[in-house]
Length: 244
Image (cartoon, one colour):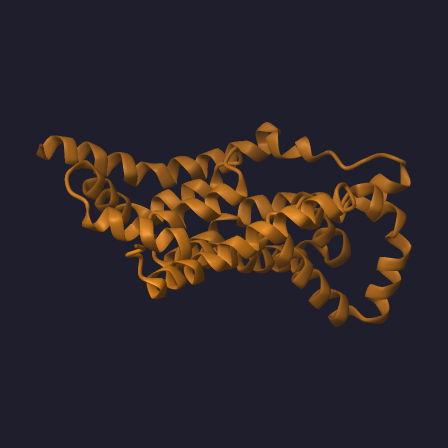
């Protein structure tokens, strides 16, 4: 005899459906696209893209944002290429803006899909738990702004990881949204800046050097921002230990 409630089972399936769709589409997209979203593709289509931009600037801007949102939301390959392309097509100011907006919207999409699926269940269990697990969730909520900013600022943290983890531990959606938008600005400026000079790089027959992010004059200020984001966390940890 099966005592499982069919309604409850359907409810769990519906909660998991969004994240399953994102994972499935992302996997299929990664296999189908392969290395299509590359600098070689951009170089080969450079003239056509620039001509279309000059003839239909708003249309290309909208198409770029939609494409970038899809890349981030489905964790498709080519996010770095898309960021650099934003600078190549639209310049430093508009390029940085559209890169930040598109990346934030894409991150929000995968966050919400995970939040209302696995994240909702896991967060509820953490809330109902006792002892160390409940204290961990409470500590995360006390420092969630600082932690989220730190996740975005540290270049070594994969972007999709920084999108999924907050959803799984019950971070507030609005907090996730604005910290994502603010936290990715430094990196977005760097990639957009590389894109601004991409035409000259192509003219020389070279490929863009994305290792610029790790140059001391670039990574130094970013690490400084990481330190500022981490400082309140350290202070709260020290105060917590002192109180114990």
